[in-house]
Each structure stands twice: as C-alpha cells, then as structure tokens.
Image (cartoon, rainbow, N blue to C red):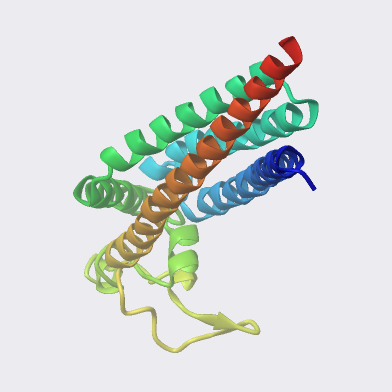
Length: 229
C-alpha cells in the first residue's frame, strides 16, 4: 500500500472515530439530560412546596430540558454532517455551562439554612393557629414540633399523631425526639450539597461535549474544503 493510500485510510479512520465519539456524546447528553430531569423531579418531591429551593427546582428542570435539546440537536448535526446545526449545539452547551457556573457561584449554605429556618418557622406559626399545618413535614422527616415535642406540651397542646412513628397502624409509645427545624435543615442541606457536585460534574461533561463538537466541526470544514477544491 502506498504512503498516500495509508495517509488517506488514516485520515478517514480518524474522521470516523471523532464522528462516532461525537455522536455517542450527543446521545449521552440526552441520557444525562433525562437523568437530570428525574433528579429535579425527585428534589421537587423532597423540597416541600413553599420552601425556597422548591421554586428553584423548576429552573433545574429547564436546564435538564436544554441538555436534552442539545443532545438531540447534536445528534442531528452529527448524522447529517451539518456545521450550522453543530454550531447551534455548541451554543446550547456554552449556555448550559454558563448557567451551571452561575448556579455554583451563588452557592451559599448559610442562605440555604436561613431560608429553611424561615420556612419551618412559618409552618410552625401556622400550626399554632390551625392544627395540621406541620403534619406532612413531621411524617416526612420523622420530627415533632419546631425544637421538639415539648413545643406542644409546653403550650398545653395535644401532641399530634404525625409526631409518632406508625407501623401497621400501631403508633409508637413516645413521639419523635428531634424537632423539625434540625431535621429539615439537615435533609435540605444534604440535598443542596449533592446538587453542587452534580452541577460541577455536568460542567465537565459539557466541556467534553464541546471539545468533541469542535473537533467534528473542524473535520466537516476540512471535508467541505476538499470537495470545493
């Protein structure tokens, strides 16, 4: 085999390799986007309606949708060999990276804890006026009152059933010892920390997608030039 023929085979193999890698990455974007959407739905369920983080989860669902869209656009660009479509894909990925960086830069555990405290305290104040406002929270996080079940007894209020662990219709003898303020703060903060690392991981994943996308664009540009000549 001549040197020119070997070079042609090498270049062709390299184009096929980057095309396949880029196509696989775009399909991966769709999968990761779906997983991110599922994570957002999970967090919506965990962060109770009315909490500060509950509203922000809709933003995360939008970002997951954008990642799925980027994956679909990238797949079309790789399949049809369209540079314009690939450029749209790269713009979407850059916008996603910017949104992740913005999210991470505004990461503030103190602000998160303060928002959670306001949320739990607001529910407790409603509980004092209308019994049952704390029911869902107490059942979900296995807690009782604001600081503990003594919040009820000190006000001569009956400790609600939601403060007791229930199994097969049988209530425990003693209520939950931990107050909802501490329990909810701990749970929300743990999810908040996990979310930070997910954003960092997605930034790295999208950077790889951009590198592969640019590489494929270069390959397509060179191919177009050769046909022109």
